[in-house]
Image (tube, rainbow, N blue to C red):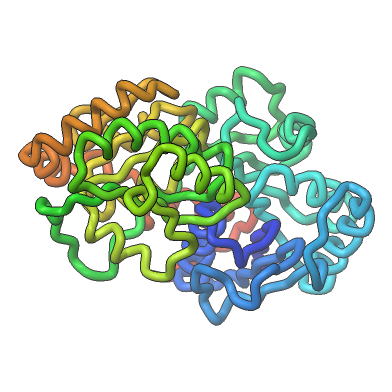
Amino acid sequence: MHVGFFSGDITRSGGTENVSIMLANRLSADTDYTISFISLFEEHDSPFFPIDAAIRRFSLYPTVTHGIQHYFDTCKRLRNIVMDYHVDVLIDIDGILDMYSLPLKRKTGVKVVSWEHFNYLQNPDVPYRKLTRRWAAHSADAIVTLTETDRKLYETNLTLKCPVIAIPNPMQAPANPVSYDADSKLILSSGRLTYQKGFDLLVDVAAKVLLDHPDWQWRILGEGEDRPALEQKIHDAHLDGRLTLEGRVDDVDAYYRQSAMFVMTSRFEGLPMVLLEAKAHRLPLVSFDCPTGPAEIIDNGVNGTVVPLGDIDTMAAAIDNLIDDCAKRIEYSDMSESNAQRYGMATIRDAWLSLLRSFEPNEMVSD
């Protein structure tokens, strides 16, 4: 069976690309399936996250191409790849891509899985995401959400003609053992510099925290269109040199290992990979209780703290408490594996294989 992961641009450094590549690499290693990535375009010469050499990459366009004006051409280019390379299953790693995949079902017989990486309540970037969700509910072969909360939202709000399955993102264990650095005075955050991630709110939090703790630093990993505005806001808050935008970094692992805690200020998520990565590195977690994800990853009061969405003062107080209480940070670190088993790669792989096998009667997984 040929399984194609359909992406906007698989060379990007986002969490969606990261988890999709993790899953594709595992399926390539553990099954006899042919695995490939199909992108609308690839902006970078090589992907940010390593892709198994056995996995082939295709691009519909040779250069960056956006816009609904290319709709019919995009459908045609995707259909040609599906037919030429006998793709049996298309996994759309962003639900908005269903608009190109679903029209192919009748003529090609391809199965379409809509993989929702946001949540049902959010429609970022494009106004017609609501329409593609209804279309997927009617015409997709399966919808995969990242949380049980989101699965229930689909079942409550849509008339479904396909199964909706909750499969969380995997938590990947670091390559080398992790030892928590209780002496660290570094706060870490990570994500694309966009409205969704709430880094403008983070600056407000940092202004309260860092000015009261002059020996602490805060680093933000990631790049995005909000950088100029964030740089200005950091400067206006007199946090230059203490709250820094590190951009795209190659050795994210090193930052996790040097940090005292991880803070997330997102306005909304699907299931945030950054929290899972920080959890795997045994960091205490502090996050806004945004829809959806943080409340399922963080065991509140056990390995981290969940703060009401947008509550700057409570977020700052939660971070202050951890800064002032080293024993609590160590306790949270020691309990980082609480509820971790559900995010193990083997568990995630098995859930995806169960779905894929419903399209292919022959079991191809190896021991």
